[in-house]
Amino acid sequence: MQKTLALIVLAAVTSLFGSVAYAESRWVVGAGALRAFDDDQLATGKLAYEWGPMDQYWNVRPYAQLLASDTDDYYLGVGALKQVPLGRKFAVGISFSAGYYHQGSDKLGQELDHDVEFYSALMLDYQLSSETQLRLELGHISNAGLGDENEGTESLILSIVFAR
Image (cartoon, rainbow, N blue to C red; front, top):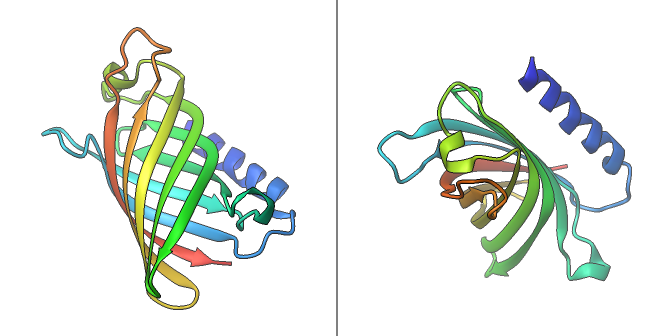
């Protein structure tokens, strides 16, 4: 039920801001792991929508994302990302989002420990075609000291990025 609600919220946000006239909006679909460097990794899926770059703000892209684990944990956030091309085929970037975290049946809450969490990531994109990219993303999610615990956790996600 909560995953369905999260998807509905993401779709509503996408519809609301999708009408803004940004060029090069993109969908991102990926899979990977939370606790990426620990022994007890969680399978994770990612769904995100990136609006086109905003010329007046150094080509920063606003985006909304949903990360969901196989133990019903999920993170729903909104933020911004910035990418810089490296030659013709590659681009590197950083992103930051703030959002809501729901603890599922796993004890991931020990690392996160708050409803409000922040997600930052480094990404490397490879251009497969004019409309498709392959993205490798290394992320970190934590509560920035809002909760009693602030261990945080890392994610490693491989995604396909589709231009709209």
